[in-house]
Length: 561
Image 1 (cartoon, one colour):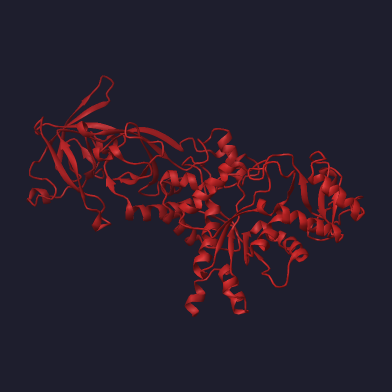
Image 2 (cartoon, rainbow, N blue to C red; image 1 turned 30 degrees about the vertical axis):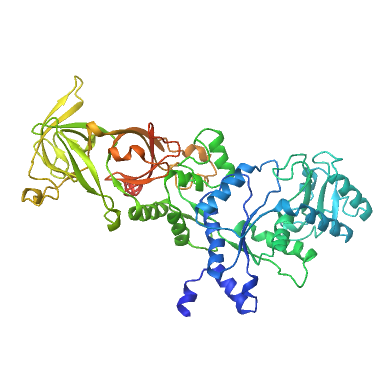
C-alpha cells in the first residue's frame, strides 16, 4: 500500500482522502471544460490526460463541457477541433455538455439571488466600476446602485434579457463585500449584455453569464465531484464556493475546486492570444501548423497520441509552475516512433553516384528490414542500380581520419547493398560536384554470407536509386523560437524571438515504396529523423513533415553558445 501511495500525485491524494472520509466512489465525476475560442495546445493536453486519467483510475465518468459563454470569440469550428483532439488522444467522454445548456437555469438562479438581495443591476460604465474596486490594500467603494430596490433590479434584469438596452449600459453584479481582501469578491459581475449570435443558441439570448458565475454552477448541475483547474484560478475558489452556497442542496454532490500548476513548454508560447497573433500575422500557416504547440499542430507534425500521453505522465502534476524543456517531448516522440515507424531511405540533398563497374541496364531488388525494433514488421524490397543518390554532405574530396563517410580513395557500405570506393568526381564550370564516380565490390552484398560481405568498413550510407526515386517536398520543421522563454521578457516582444530557420523546404528523393504513402503515415528516414506524410499530400505531389531529428541537435548548439 505504501508503494501505491508514493505513485499518487497530489490531486489523486485529494481524491483518496475524500474516499477515505466517506465520499462514495460512485459519486466521482470529473470534467474537461475548454472554452471553444481557439485550438487546444499542449497545456490542455496535460489537463485532458489528468481528468480522463482520473476517470480511468477510478472508473468514473468524465464530461466534456464547453464553456461557451462568449459568442464574440467562440465558434463551432473550435468545438469540432476540440472533440477531434480529445478523441485522438485516446479518450472518450461520458457526456458532451455546454454551458449554454444551462442559460435558463443560470438566469433563474440569478433571479433568485436578486430576490434574496444578493445581486443588483449596475448602471455605471466599466471604467467606473473598475475605479471603485479599490486596491489589494484599500477597500473598494460601494456602487451608487448597490442598494437599488429589489423590484427595480428584477425589472431591469428582465429588460436586459429582452434586449432593451445597449451593450455596456448595464451589468448584473453579485452583492458580496467591497472590503474583501480578495478583490474577486468585491461585487463581481455576473452578466453582461452582448448583442451577438451564439453558435448554439443563435439570438435567443442577449445577456451572457461570466465565467465565475457559470463555472461552479455548471459543475453543480452536472454533479462533478472534483473541479480541477490551473493555478491562476486559486483566488477564484472563494467566489466559486460563494456562488455554490447560494444554490446547493444538501442531498446533492457539492463540487470541490482544486488547482494544479500550469506546465509551460520551452521555445514556444501557449497563450491563446499570442498563438492567434502568430496565425493572424502569418508567422505560421494556421492553427495546425506543425510548429505550433497546438494538439492539431503536433498531430500534423507526426507526434503520436502515445508520445503526448507519456509526456504528460512524465511531467506529472505539481503545485508550482515551471518550464518544461521541449527536448523531453522530443524524447517521447523519438521513443514511440522508434518502436512503430517503418524504416525507409530518403536523400534530402542529393548528389549522384555512378558505379563504373556496374552494368548499365541492370537492377536488383534488395531485401531491407522494415523495423529492427519490431520482429513482426517484416521486410521490403528496394531497387538498386548503376546510378543512385547519396547526401551531398556524406562525401568529401579530402577529409581527415575522423570523417567516416565517403571520400576519394575511401570506402563505405551502402545500407542493405554493397561496399563502394570513390575514385573521381565530375564538376561543373563553377566547381560544384555533379557526379561521384565509384566502383563497387560485387562480392560484398549485404547478407550474402561471403567473406567480402563481412568485411568491415567504418561508414554506412543511405541511398536511393536514381531511376526509381520518387520526388517529394520535405518540410524540415524546427523550434519556432530561438529563446527558451520568449514571452517572459518584459523589455521585448515575443515575436522578436521567432526562429528564422523554423522551416526549411527541400526537394528530396525517396525510395519508390513511398509513392502511395497515405497522409498521416509516419516513417523513419534512416540517418535523418522521423517524418510524417502531410495531410495535403497526394501520390502526385508528396509532402513530408519532419517530426523530430534522430538526436537533439539543439543540445549541442546550446553547449557551444
